[in-house]
Length: 187
Ligand code: ADP
Image 1 (cartoon, rainbow, N blue to C red):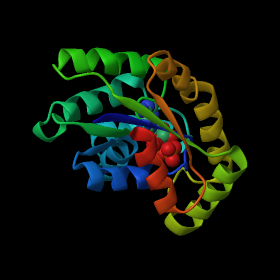
Image 2 (cartoon, protein in one colour; image 1 turned 90 degrees about the vertical axis):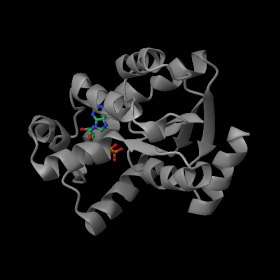
Image 3 (tube, rainbow, N blue to C red; image 1 turned 45 degrees about the vertical axis):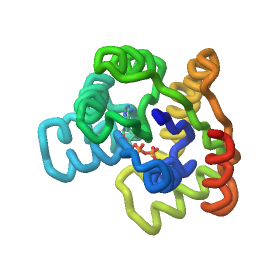
């Protein structure tokens, strides 16, 4: 199973992604996690990414594409993977399709859309800000991330719909209910 998780920041991609990892036994590749690790480690890549991340803007395509290509080439990603936070714009989606061809992998099977409305998203992210204190979970940055999502990432639903790959799942409810909805939608 080669899967892309699509949804606004705070829609639950990370959490549901972990459940999918346990269920399918394939790795999750999160560009957000990889970038935060690079920032924490103080690598050159992390230094390049930090200011965009802190401002709620997208990090340059070539940086995230490099991360994903390196990861998709590793042995444990050959049987399948779950992408969380990538692709985030249509340019990245096109590159991903080309990359899979180049790596000799089959194409993406499904794009799972976790649908959650903006007001619920803002509330969740403000709650997360209090608990986790992530640098980009401040109200103005949150609003900007939602705008970037609506402008740049949401159009990916059309990209994957044209390939008949979108499965839409209601992302509001208990974690287990949402997970069961995803499994049902993938059947
Ligand atoms: P969220 O979904 O809560 O916004 P992520 O952890 O997916 O959080 O991403 C955090 C930040 O990392 C983004 O706001 C962006 O700056 C950067 N980032 C993550 N993935 C990508 C990507 N595919 N392209 C560009 N920037 C990215």
